[in-house]
Image (cartoon, rainbow, N blue to C red; front, side, top):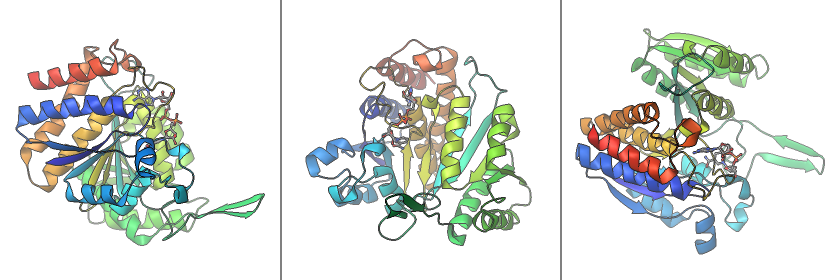
Length: 353
Ligand code: NAD
């Protein structure tokens, strides 16, 4: 498997270096023959190539088996005409990575304020309330007068159907419970259609139990009793917000992993941003990106029917549990290690099996 590595901004290079070390360990233990193509995106690419991402980079990613994207300083990138393109949006749109799979769970030994839980947020990734990806050209946020802004949201049958199917398929591999999260009490047409299509697709999966929750009430439910949930499917913006909450509930945003998956391509990416407040200090938790890399290996294994990759993905997940339990981790999850040391400890634990 050939993976393109883009370290990104802020803490990106630190957590990516630890992740590559762990992937090398996984490759050795499971005989995966992983190879890496290192390249740049974000601020460094803007400095060197005049754009945060380039057509040549896209070409390289399309020819590879997977992409690992480090966190980006998205807020800095305001003008696409100046090459300031949001790399996450760019790859999600260009590679049609419609499903954003964001697991969150508790870890033994890591104190939290809620009951133990293990859930996955499945977030639509290619339309919704995202002005940079829901129209063919330009942006769907408009300055009508200096004091009036209109921001549009797009919801389509095709995108609802495919995200619903991804979520049901995942639910069949887990505890067979799917929760639809929406705001159909206000967005009656768009979210009404989203619920209807999810339930329609659900008829193909009769052994999956389905319920639905209004997004604002869901915030309370998930804080009060996250153990009630298994797979949660929702539209783009709601999924973005809800999955940061579930990552933090699991103990730290530094545990928030994600996979952006489409039919032909996938991209592992931490759920958080570039964390400029802690960049360069060797304190960032690399587990978010490590676990995302594990998800990428799992996706490849299922797609190519390669059990060694699925086993490696599972081992990465189990190693995270072990590392946290033994406090071989960064400060945010109860350890005392720096980013470099936490990555090295993880690679050692993974190799020990
Ligand atoms: P952030 O997610 O970068 O950080 C929020 C808080 O969580 C900070 O206190 C940070 O120190 C902490 N944190 C994040 N990751 C951590 C880790 N691995 N270990 C320990 N602590 C961690 O959010 P922000 O500060 O609002 O945004 C910074 C930049 O990231 C902005 O430019 C924003 O647009 C961008 N962003 C990018 C992505 C992405 O690339 N997918 C996602 C969210 C935000």
